[in-house]
Length: 159
Image (cartoon, rainbow, N blue to C red; front, side, top):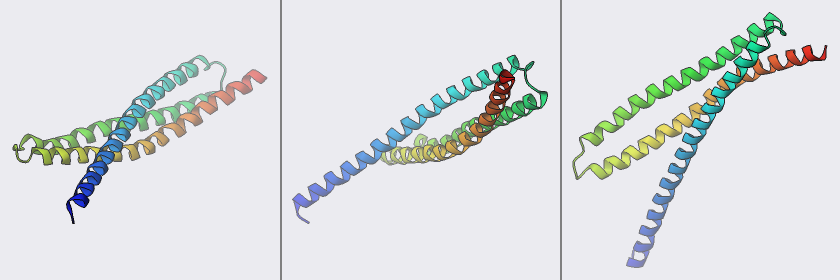
């Protein structure tokens, strides 16, 4: 391999490494922002649902109210379980991953930081997959509960 090919190969490898880091960071930031936004919307949704539920109690049958409340509490349980599990999982995972950084020497610090970044990206990717699953489990009962309340109240208004 001549010098020109070597330089081209090195530049190509640098570019590839940069792109991998860039897109990893982009996906991480996107996930974090989406997670924060979704948690906010879900929280507002629970408050709105239970406010409506409380205000419509006199107009709706007990069975509808109880079923909707059960479904919403199920949704809330999925949401809380996921958030607590994520918090615990992240804390344990980061302790395991940070420990090698604390014992790093000047000779090994760069390699350990690179491994830490890869491990952190791996954790976030796993959390993204679980987030979609948990979000689905959270939304399905919440949507059904909201539909029950809305449809029953709509039927009441049309009487």
